Every structure is written in C-alpha cells, then in structure tokens.
Length: 162
Image (cartoon, rainbow, N blue to C red):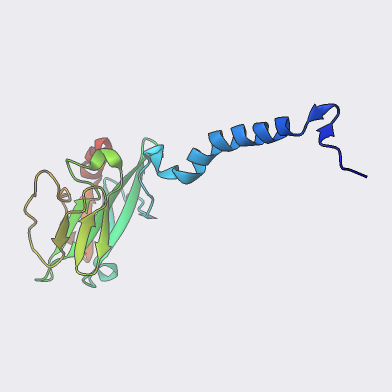
C-alpha cells in the first residue's frame, strides 16, 4: 500500500508551511534574546535607610564585584573594584557612549572591557582616562566603619543609564 500524502483531503504541505511560518516568527526571539534592552542582574543590594552599604571584607580581594539595585522597575548596576594601591572605587556598570546598549563591562584578567565597544582599562590604574566617552562612570562613595557606603540618591541618579 502506498502512503497517502493527504490529511482530511488537504495536502500535508500546508502543515509544513504553517510550521515554517511559525519558525520564521519564533526564531529571531530565540536567536536574539539580548535585543530586549534590559540590563543584566547581579547580586541585589537592599538599601539601609538612605544608603547602600557593602561590607569591605567582601570586596577587598583585588577583584571586581557587580551589584544591582532595583528602582522604578529598572536594574541599576554598579561595581566595586580595588586599584593597584589597594583603594576601593565604585562605578556604574555603564559608560556615557555605550550605555544605550545596556551591556556594561566584563572582567578579562587584569582588565575591564566595555562589552559594546571593546575598550579595555587596567584594573590596577587608580584613575581611568576616558577614551572618547567610554569609561565606567564613577559613582560617589565613602568608606565608613568597615563598609563602602553609597547614598541611595546617588545610586538612583544612574537610572537613566539603564
């Protein structure tokens, strides 16, 4: 017996076209999920009154530590780093030229790299010179009683970057 290529009187090819059409619509959503323009999420910080406090002992390891503060349904990302002299610095996870892509920075060995434009900065440098408008944006902070303290208002000012 020869198999029939018809289902309910219609050729099976109609079903294949339907599947193909669905794949055309769904494939870009699967292949390009980063197009949502949503900033990534890191360890969330919870404010303590009018400030965010991060224990120094948790970040004093010459590494880079990323954090997320949630404000008005947006993730505001920032990081803490230690320079070559042992001084702690805080920065938004954004730069003035590439913030619109919401990609931030990535650590590569002893450098931090802008994911959007690939510019690198040495983590050991005390200050980063802007190349164009790309460099992590400084976030004002103070060291008090074993904590890095950042005023909540200063963190929230970064909302427009995310």
